[in-house]
Image (cartoon, rainbow, N blue to C red; front, side, top):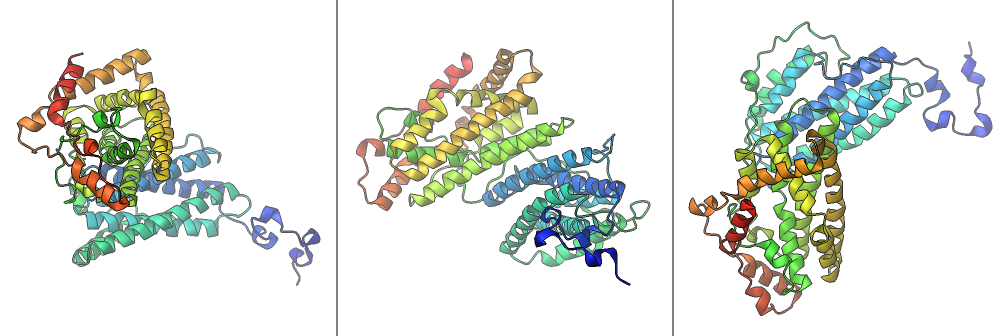
Length: 477
């Protein structure tokens, strides 16, 4: 017997229904609003936990490439949390209940990943088990929900799948690069703990029958996760306490040519890897804020990681081995171990404001233009744009906690002065010889482009000792 659709022909054979689906597909029923919201809340919870897990591991992860990867993916997760919060709020669901845990087994699943004791297990747990399962759940949702009535959800999930696939492939490649000796141990954990927890949760998306309670014993998360605020670096960072070169003294001197200053700016960009290390501590140790705070702070954290990679690429493009420059972690180490999260945020905002005048980011962009190196100009152009955004983020989330902008700046100034006042302890503790690495890096760049080193540039040697009086003066003011 023919169906009513059998004789339906789109007008002039135009794609029907705005290209979302066929009429036949739209004629079938889909999930209810209630079921859509229930599953979307699961996805929201998963993205939020992934954001927390990846952010919290940035500081103590020693491998530079993984620090930047975690920073990127934590930001992507934050964006998807934001999109899902907006969509759920559109679906007749007050109160939203977005902070509720969907199922105790799902909570335990993410707790286990967060507490993974090794980088390898973290990679596989987060990228393969969690992100892989999230992709399966979203793909099932895309199949089950109605393509026309729930088109807004399908749209945002389509973008989520693109980025989840990229993250999943990154995690697979990163895990494989670290060898295979750890795989048997991981598989036991995954097959006996993680997968059974998801089964008890009714699968990650909650479409299956869930158990009434968690029965799978925890392994790594028996003891709750403790954030590690001490920055770690891999073996390429050979002298992380080094204060042997005063980059700012070189950059702001009228004595030196723009091309050489461009090289020093690349050092400053790569040195910014300490900002994600510090900002991760603010995010991890500041609970209870509106979600917009975490989204914006994650964006800034990712930008700072991107700036470090800009410096890395710039060095490579100029034929310089960036590991010969001594990339320090003094700033993140001192702030994370000596200041409160609020003081760290104050320091961050206070320093950002110093980048806005003409002697700040505009000057660096002009130096990039004057260097004759188009890549450097591009790097500084976007670095400047990002810092303007970061200043706005500070005005949105940091300044309102004070009575005035002046009070907010004074608080940050005082916190920064507290750190500067005993900066000399780095040398006094004998942590480094403060080697002047600049001549070797400069000569490397000259050799790569076939130019003779400028003797005046080569002789630059304003070291930590020369800077010490300035630091003490600033701290006393």
